[in-house]
Image (cartoon, rainbow, N blue to C red):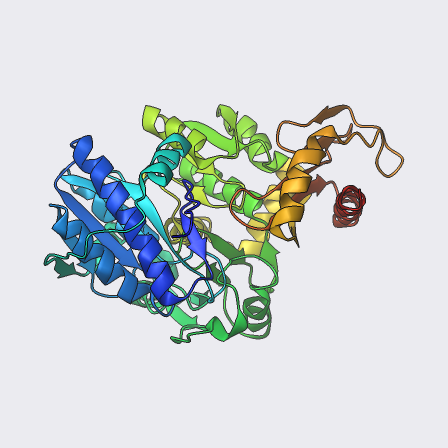
Length: 465
């Protein structure tokens, strides 16, 4: 029986459906044992995404979890992760839940994630315990479970939380791109129900996702950019596979970088909603949210890149917003986990309140905070190369980059260098995928791209050793 590598991000693989089901059941059994041991609750929820095979695995997980003594509710259709999180948070007797799917990965992947009774991801230590507890095989048993529409009550929650009346009054137009993921039909129907006009692309049920990855980043958002640029949409909203992260496109078809989306949402929450609190960002975050927090008189808290750090901040209370390394935004006032729907509605509500196009709001933000260009570049590597880079990058000291000496350098997460003009880059290996991630920010796109290229050259040289 294959060894299971399970992290707090979940388990994912390109295994066959039968193999993936076997691993998912082994994980589910271990999780159920932990829930029972800690007496966490009596009910469990299971949801699944749109990829082929996820529904079959979800039914098997629901049956096994029910056989372990839990009252189990299985989503009756593919459901956004925020809907599962909402169902858990609303149920005081919930021990936790499972999301069967593979997040933002390509259609060839299958996998499973675990949520706690509040809809949060588990911590790294607990994930390691599950990894050790997973048996070589599970009992061949299943019990009955219930079916429910997890998305319906979540959408009611959203409708009660936001006001888009000014946009509805003038029949504002939006483009919705679910990237073949769990926002398909749901995001469009939500906006149409408010009285907006909404067109959906990439909303079919395709086993191969049309060759796209359900990741709300370039190049997968390129078609949405083109459609917005050539149509009449005032905004483009691109949801990743589980509906955790959102890409926002202005009316000219230009992608708004995620740090600027965070800064716009932050200002809206404070200036239009009257909210306040700490702003929690990872060490790899752009300077833009920090500048906005300072302008608004908010405390900025920088934490490690592990989502558990942000989760712990949210658990202590008093948090206005958090973001992860890939731009996933959490607004605890509406839910304690990443939520692309909430971000989309915050942006739309801001446009409604301000009465301005999105491009004008971004331009005002640049004038107020100063222009910066931020980007993430991913470099695919094989597993052996990833491990080698993980071991070697902490020992790399280039001295200078592009003829410039850094004002600070850190090896805490790989190789991180900061320069006098607030430009910086970080090279680090992914924890869950065979990738090297390169973050960079500079005053201009040209300077940022030069930093990205220079950092990628460093990776290539290290790989040649």
